[in-house]
Image (cartoon, rainbow, N blue to C red; front, side):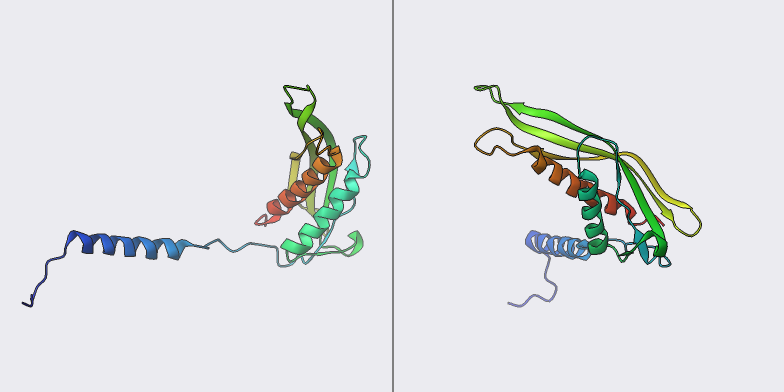
Length: 176
């Protein structure tokens, strides 16, 4: 027997709802607003950060990581200050280490955190207009000083430097 006007079943309604949900979900996947960069600013200078702490060479590591992140993730070309459209300057204001955990058996440190705090300013090199000014900007890295890992603080320092460079570049997006 052939029906001329079949009635939808509960299963049909569920299938339609599922199809509509999937279409709506897939339409939103991967959507992100366009990243906005200043079209007139094609170059940026990143002088070596000033370091007000007793930790040596952190300023060089941070500047190097920042240059790599800018060139990797933005359309800007890193050049000398004399040729740049914008300049990003910064100061390492503090570095601290804090205990995260201690062994109950030995009493030795199991995990430690290395935190770098900076101030930075990004400005237009032509008119001196400040594009961004951040104070107390920080990132942390962890390391395990206890055996068998016996990592030095340099492991945590490297992780903090990489995270800080990544976070600085993330703040550059959409600042114009």
